[in-house]
Image (cartoon, rainbow, N blue to C red):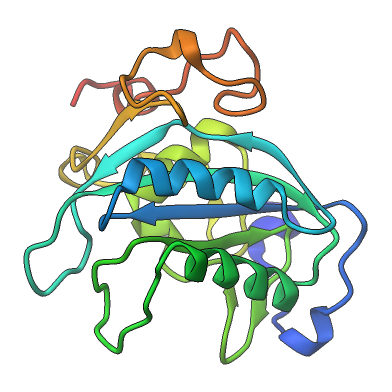
Length: 221
């Protein structure tokens, strides 16, 4: 087991303020109000346009049932992007919340409320950061198929500090949980036809196809 697999010492956010020029970060997006397909697609581009940041890769779009909702909600559209950024964790959080606000996000005291756009920082390199406003890695990352499926699509060997390898975490999820999340296509390609995938988004190489749950788990859902 590597040091990364065991996790790194927890640091307060203030101790993690200085980012390297090319820190790699994984970010999840989700939306289930308004026009979720458009909002997630536009937000992917906006993440890549943040100051001192560049888009490395974006997953396919996935549809999932609302997770942990106390009342019925529309399905979510989800994706994960990889960016390189020189923004510190707190500056990155501020930038992502500004993007949410531009898409009409209104924060509610209700846990798991429906939303026009939700952006979560999943991983910031191999750092472990805990603060009143931010926890990295995301504390429920390892439980969520709608995060692990797009995450393993773009980076199967991503290390979740304290938890292990993303693809291993995905394989450990029950089939009943995995079946609630389905790939529906690439960003800007809501028809599901890969032929019109825009340059710079989607798979990490033009010939790659995203893994399906059956491919990852060796079974068919």
